[in-house]
Image 1 (cartoon, rainbow, N blue to C red):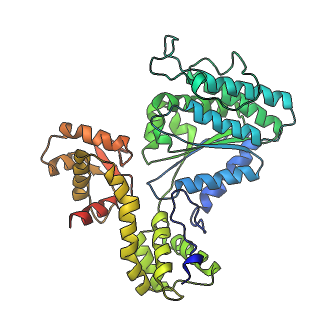
Image 2 (cartoon, rainbow, N blue to C red):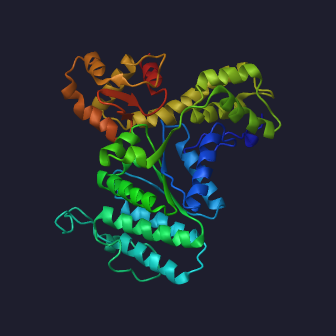
Image 3 (cartoon, rainbow, N blue to C red):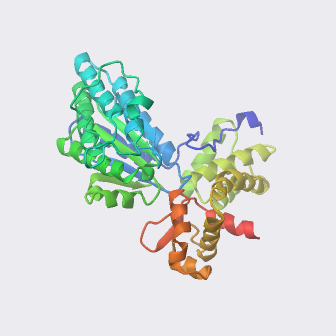
Length: 405
């Protein structure tokens, strides 16, 4: 098989040649766009799932759908060490520029408000600049060629400012007959104050039926993060759990790109691929790429998959699993291995009791809190419910058990 024509794309956030199994989510988003554009009540959207299930790909596909409808869009990736103000300002700046703007004066006013928001230094509750806050005005300029507007979205209180900014941006979008969509990846990494502000702003926009939606993507515990910030968040967002592909969708993700290149998989090969990948989209692309390269001819057979599997697993062990494992400290690695030992291999991605992990290590649960907290902050594990812990990466437990043999 010609490796130059290999259609599979196992890259981080890289759209696969066939976006299989996500038609329902994309259709639902189209309905949201239509309803919001017609001032119908709607909720912003939160996508959750493990690493490698295609959340970022779906986020990008939704952004493309909004662009095709003439909406202004902006995207950012949340980071635990970065406040929301700057990246959100940059995303909204792009969204405003994308909008068709019949009223130049109103557009310039909104850009002035956006500039004031971007440049404002964060404030502590007593109104003073926080000692640890960088001098944002000196370090970053938003590239907006209009004067900053004073007295709007510039209080330094992120919740007040974000409500005012969203209201003004959405008002401008409404005047154009379109809307604005803000896409936030890794949403669970927002700091608590920013989560609270984002929820408050979405709540206000929803109540006023203004044409602005937020689409967030994050790990499975993101709903708990939002709920801890605002009690009404469970009613504020439309939650969609993005999971592995079923057999039909996984087969389509493999077969459609192959057929576009004049090749195919036989039925036994597809069954072997699903057994190896369990339908996780990143694994489907990774195994598909190697199977194509090792197969001597079309159709790709189960024997070809058997030859490809060790090479695909070796690549995943380095790039997908190993790179994450290397980020952990020795104590954190010990905790990860204990999680792998106590989890049920027949339910590889299920949460395990933290008490069972402590028992496996013959330690008191309290003594393991630093290791567990470190893993949570690094995004290697998550806690969807009190007293239980799970890997954020599918099949990570299997990888760890294989390393011990």
